[in-house]
Amino acid sequence: MSILIYAESAEGKFKKVAFELASYAKKVAESLGSTVTAITFNITDASELSKYGVDKVLKVNDSKLANFSAKAYADAIQQAAKKEDAKLVLLSSTTDSAYLSSLVAVSLDAGFASNVVGLPVSTSPFQVKRNAFSNKAFNITEISTDVKVLGLAKNSFGIVASSSNLTEEDYAPSINDADFAIKIESTEKVSGKIAIADADIVVSGGRGLKGPENWGLIEDLAAALGAATACSKPVSDLGWRPHGEHVGQTGKPVASNLYIAVGISGAIQHIAGINSSKVKVVINSDPEAPFFKVADYGVVGDAFEIVPQLIEKIKAFKAQ
Ligand SMILES: Cc1cc2nc3c(=O)[nH]c(=O)nc-3n(C[C@H](O)[C@H](O)[C@H](O)COP(=O)(O)OP(=O)(O)OC[C@H]3O[C@@H](n4cnc5c(N)ncnc54)[C@H](O)[C@@H]3O)c2cc1C
Image 1: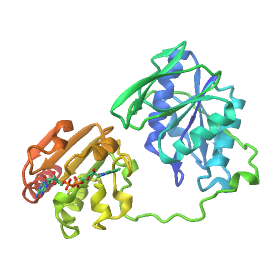
Image 2 (image 1 turned 60 degrees about the horizontal axis):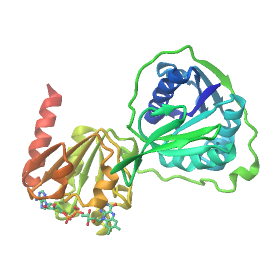
Image 3 (image 1 turned 30 degrees about the vertical axis):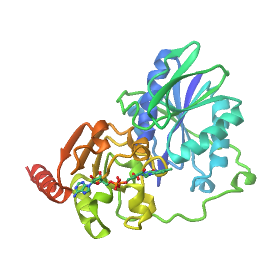
């Protein structure tokens, strides 16, 4: 029996979530006395996975799967799960994996729990802790099916080094043309920018910035920190920033290590999407702004005075 993970990649390179998932799988495997197998798509060298405890990798290299296709990937993953007799299939909680997870679960007749945080609470019965109510609460979910599919919440476990003797196997699951009924024809990427989903640090601006002409402050702070830029909903509604930067309950979720909110009040719908971030820093001129209640560090003051000083300090620190 093995645990199967889907090790996500983009353009031939593993995403960080793949290493977090491998680390998590290794720990679960230790408690179950099983091994960890990964399935990858269009990766030539999978050796990096050996640093996080993966025992075996099934490498699917097929030009038809160069672009993400939920049905085709799910089909390949369920075939790999059956081949490896995997009773536990682990995916992360990225947009692609969240899409895949339910398809994989249905095809394996498996119980599925999304947004899992931390190691299983119990392995018999099998119970996991999950984020609920936009990460404002937890629940304990029991899965009693033979095969179980879990979606691990991003940044909930971390990356833990653990070496293994990795064996690599080329794997060619049978993929039907019908699996490509929905396919991505083209992708337009924002160039030169760090994607919010992949970012360790996110610098986000709200209506307190007064207008798009002041966004240089956010961009300069992000550049100094190597961070992605984001914004509150009204900012994108007003057209100050593109909708792809809107974070919160109705926007992109953020689970970064550091989230810096500048001139954002901290409305419940905003917090709902960002409160999985580990450290939250708030810069706001209003000491009563609700965001301070959930902040780890808060600066009460005018963003137009504080942010330039912060940028200077970061640059000076980095130059040392
Ligand atoms: C169904 C629904 C879904 C929603 N989904 C989302 C969502 O996903 N994401 C989201 O963000 N919002 C969402 N909203 C909107 C949300 O309720 C708030 O209206 C919004 O988050 C407020 O944005 P803001 O903080 O940028 O603006 P404001 O509420 O106007 O706050 C601006 C803040 O800037 C501060 N400020 C002003 N000047 C300065 C200065 N010079 N220096 C420092 N600080 C300053 C002010 O003190 C204030 O706290 C949703 C609302 C609804 C009803």
